[in-house]
Length: 177
Length: 177
Length: 177
Image 1 (cartoon, rainbow over the protein chains, first blue to last red):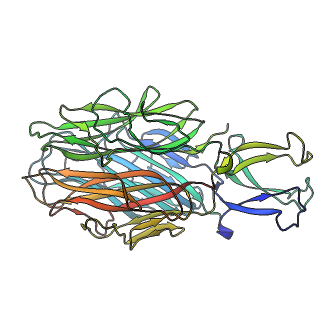
Image 2: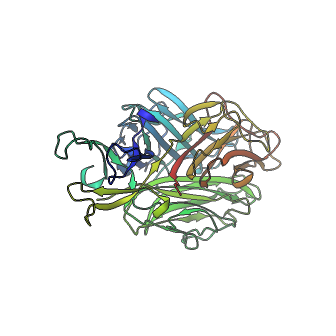
Image 3: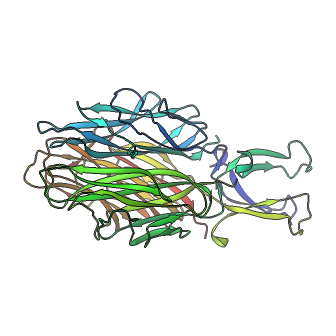
């Protein structure tokens, strides 16, 4: 670790400051200069492509790094963050082709990865879940968000008052380098 | 942070106690007064509505805040907790309507959010996953659990000796305010 | 906690070392001697049974405990770890039986738990997600990985340049006992 981590040491103050066993290394602490974690939900459906998915319900937003209206999380400090997304596609009645919803995770302007669900023989209002978990080494100021990649006609990222869409994240380890 | 977090400081004991640079703030530590994390599984199917889902297999239960028989996790301290659920609906043979299983996450008496999976053209013993991740700011003594919200006739939260149902959680940040 | 955790104490150095209130216990710190977290992806499909699933794309591998080629994570220290997996089954065109993909999480030689997705009426290239989250108390040197358990003919764990397969993990609490 060295210069990148804060180290926890055991000091025996009954000994003189220069003694060989005055200080013993225990470990690098999970020290953080900020508390950052969020859990937000939607309460309405959404089907717009190529735009960050906004969220309406703020359940947890310690540190306020998640902006619900823009759908963007901005890293307050350099470090490793963990994110999870769980949502649901609603399908129309369809028997002729596979209907699709795919959602990608973006870091700044770059697509990181994708979750997709498709149904072939579906009926109106059928819900199917799609999920995503990731960790990311972020610089302070980096932004992450979710975006619909592909959505068949009649398919939506569905939500209502039951809150079926879940986006959460937290600072796992801060990098003090 | 201030009064709500434990702060880590660097002290230079070679300097006198009152010196201006005797103490330097590093950050607020992820200090916890308890270790709390669990991962439990089921080994049998379940389809009862309006009752916390019990778990049979204890894989991890550090701090013993998860009670498998009642299905309830009781927060030992005030803080932010993270929870994940992954399970599977088993469907019967059905071609006439969408069959559904939905599971909600409860905090004390209140429904927080929901995961649902539906199938239209399904065959006997077809399994489809549903998932949920959330974080929550809890008071000491707050309880959380999972509950079946909607279950079509013949549909079940399925499990057997393969352990298809996964509920885990941990204390993310303790709040010392 | 006692001997198993590092304790954080408040020391008032203005008081003599032996005074009753010289040292006050705050809590057991989430101290770690190593930083360990990873997030890896696939970029190609895979359908081999009874072999750890390899990964091709290293996004995060702080501590380098995850070996992508072998698909195995080796715990660097004793402690509690958290893992998440999200992937997708691709189905062929099929109307005669339920097609299946199931993936299990292994700890050393032992199967811990499973995620499965089945489709009855499916069309070519239909993708359906399956997911898994778990925490594990591991000894230093313990290994965990993912493995295909059941895969119907024509079904695959699908991936391409969009990165649909996500495996992440991190050290939650180190055990110093």
